[in-house]
Length: 400
Image (cartoon, rainbow, N blue to C red; front, side, top):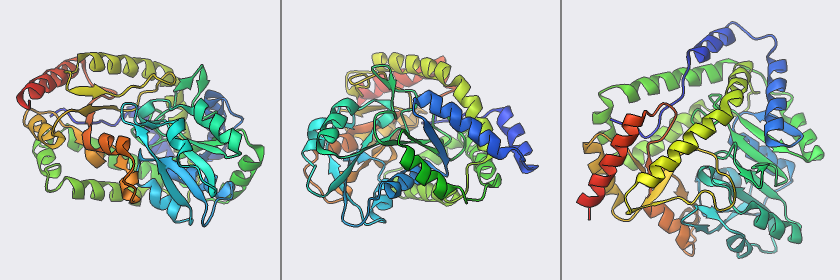
């Protein structure tokens, strides 16, 4: 079975984990070095390591003073788990529709959702594709509304040579295991706003720095990776992702990850060492995976509508997602029988407009109904890439 994703694990990670369990007296200095390196990559003066990307978002919202009754414009197609994080603060999320070909919201769709209670605009460079951040920022600046950038998928993306994450008042990055700078949890809050940075640093200064949570997460990912590489995964995938059980398994998987996500711990020395090592190799990784992305995009049958990634800037690699003109559940089932694991529906992203009761976001509805995640990741061999393409061509013909 070719799995939909794999976790990049190295022997050096294990060595760092063992070092972490023995204690790390210089953890604070290592974290500071990582923050400086990340800041230089994004091109803003402040990069603050946080417990997670979601933690970074919460710190931004609180630091900007958003609260009960304030409206936050969000994409109508993004990670649905961000909605309760916003609502828990009394903030009202208002979804702006997305272009189903880019999966990103536009300046026009954002303008249609701005109202008298709009306090901020939350933009996402989804799946590594830069959104129209210049157009959205021009719109926001004209109305005195701050922009928050979600760059969880977009580390390394650029717009006119300028890094994603350097346009809004603040940006967040995720350092989860599948991200470009994988540190087995954690996030980064990036900003050029000295006042916001000072407020956030004051809030995170008192957090306990513990090495174990990230080490535990790495060990759990080792177990997960062993299961994915096992011959038994083909059978397990059919059971986990059958039409009857897929939704429940996806919720269970997300809840399990949420339980091991550190909420209030300071970023650890172990994570900083991983982050620095991956930062140093990030440009080469982006070049390699972006080239594979283009190869796969050119090779797919016409029934797959590939994401337009380069419309507003130079994309970063995150995942390969295309829209399939047909029954995506039938496509997944047929692919599994041939040894190919695909992600569909809420396993890709969520229709947050529908979650919030809005029925006027057709772009998000189309994306949610047709999006298919196709395997492409670090370690995917050329042979497996060719096999993936061959299977998808056969299935496109069979499912006519």
